[in-house]
Image (cartoon, rainbow, N blue to C red; front, side, top):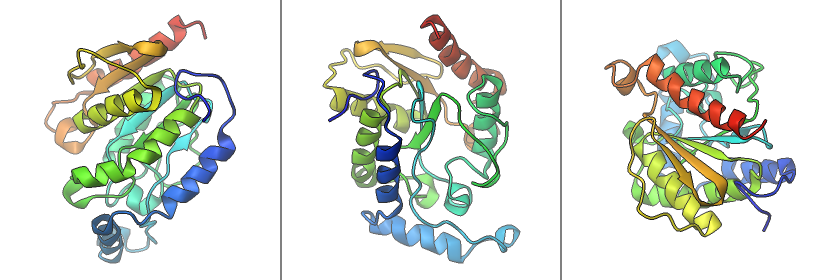
Length: 242
């Protein structure tokens, strides 16, 4: 198996493309398959002219990325509608604005998957690939999607930093890194917004609150707090010499 996060600099574009094709065709979780289709059939009036994607969402971005961003799941009327993670919803507005400010993306907003958005030195993925009811995936559904993340970690050979958006993504990221690269992290890092953890093999894990409306509208997550996460990521990459 090729080296992954923190390993050699191999080209994995073809392998990622094949993996993404598998993800799009996935029907492992019956509850999620049913929900994503029901959402598409009962779409609200504001999206009545849309043909929903209503399939699992692959990761996307730069195959040579040094920054990997892990979210929770597609939004029912965001990614499940547009066919691209964080595209067409309020969380994506926050994420792409921050990524644009720190030069990880070419534009500050994304509304559909053909709008020209391109990630630069970054790759975006999620703990599960289908929109879950009430944004709450079951533990069994997270486990079913886990192999996809493990394969991404191996294929994204240039990545050095993983930013986890939310506690669930943080826990999944830590366990996946341990499993994928036979790491032993002790004591286990505790989640906290903005915390930076230096892991074995030159890897860095950064924790962030998820830019969900529940967090942003209540002030739990502010623009300044979110920007600081990616300022730290950019600073680590600059310090690394590139």
